[in-house]
Amino acid sequence: DTAVSQTPKYLVTQMGNDKSIKCEQNLGHDTMYWYKQDSKKFLKIMFSYNNKELIINETVPNRFSPKSPDKAHLNLHINSLELGDSAVYFCASSPAGITEAFFGQGTRLTVV
Amino acid sequence: AQSVTQPDIHITVSEGASLELRCNYSYGATPYLFWYVQSPGQGLQLLLKYFSGDTLVQGIKGFEAEFKRSQSSFNLRKPSVHWSDAAEYFCAVREYGNKLVFGAGTILRVKS
Image (cartoon, rainbow over all chains, first blue to last red; front, side):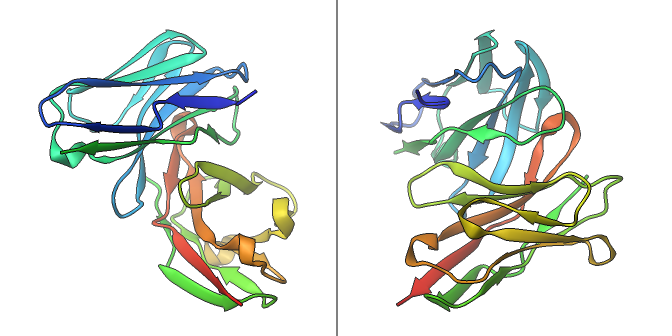
């Protein structure tokens, strides 16, 4: 009964590959997010979707493409992976209104 | 854009001692403030939040935080630290679209 679940938990891949990270929430929330935590543990938002509609798109390379097939899922596809993409990617969700976000366990992406 | 400053990168306290982690935010019309904790290899767990009302808010695991508008601060406190509190702590402020802007984090070490 995990609230926000991400797969995979670890991902090691070579430069130039394309990979996807999946996220699902069973909380019935309207909004989902992707955050990136870099090697210095700094957390920054990448994208936000509300009911499958893109709301926030921070300054992220267009190699990163989020996809929300329904409001319970927000996947992150990354093309042509680079060394600098190595980070922990967190999915999160929140209900409507001003409220906190609920985070998944993170996906540690290592590009070699 | 709002910003969050956590002045202390590392803090070490003895088990049983009191704890205060500092957080300062840039001015927002109505700051919505959060403290999250991240244990090693884990996701982020909400400790507490401040939206309005009583400026002293209670959270989980015996934590509390006090909102001081005059000082633009939202410091996290715990009267007696347990070894299991060792983790990284993030202060965050809400921006538009429920986007969270995080501080750089404070690593708490607990010595026995």
